[in-house]
Length: 158
Image (cartoon, rainbow, N blue to C red; front, top):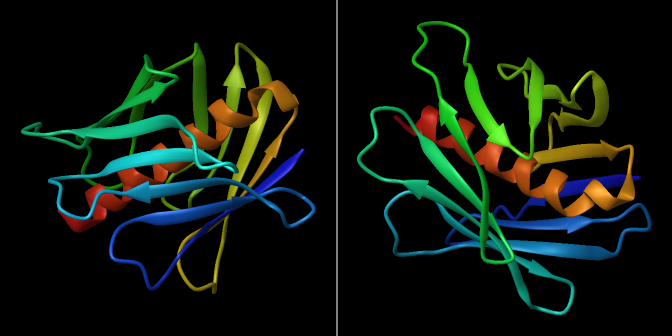
């Protein structure tokens, strides 16, 4: 299955629409306008809040907590590096490999690839294509992709 994450360019805060393969909006992500750091809320197609991505403040490097259904599922921490970005991802037992510099990476559960995330270039706002092997991983995979984007954005703004 495939999802397209597209950032709204002319929004006051971080706002993303997530589309399915047929072009229908599956999820919306909205950031808080007057907050310190990234505080993102994920809504389903009916407007129900189903997840959150919250930046932890007063940390040496950007750190985020991922909450789904009110439960903490994991964290993303930017590791201190000089040249190429690296992230410590503790989320659902998954690990991520790839090129964060170019925003292309694969998510694994053990040795099994479960999701491929690719940035589309030359678009208005950030746009990512997510190919997910198992439809049951859709929500968790999409939230992880948005959280990684927020971590990259936070590092770029420092």
